[in-house]
Image 1 (tube, rainbow, N blue to C red):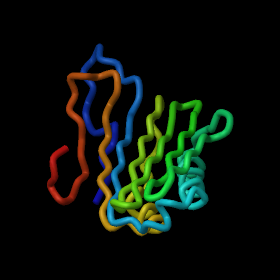
Image 2: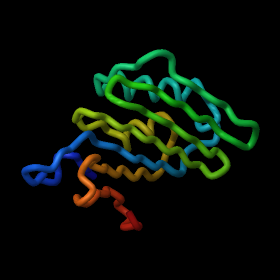
Image 3: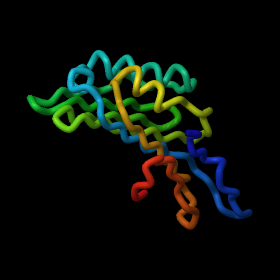
Length: 144
């Protein structure tokens, strides 16, 4: 399914777009991958690299006690990338905010490859334009 894009809505003259935020939810992921900082760090590094983003300083990672998962945070010159996992529920979430429009990225494919996810929902939100609608690529027709 095509990803929503921050270019999907025409911005009326006079409204400013300060950035685009991708909210990504993946479920059906393997517990092992969601507990592995190494796996998640490799995935986040791939996101940063393939989208041509720029990390400032060192990423921060926190591994929580069982049954908890891992949280990662990258400060980017373009804004930030965050990753949170719940192995006990098979869920990973990602939040990527950019003050520029990066190219599309194959979230569903990459999360299936890296985490074994069975279902991925990618939502985009234009920031700085509160009157504009959000977009949602949920194939299952859930609430957005």
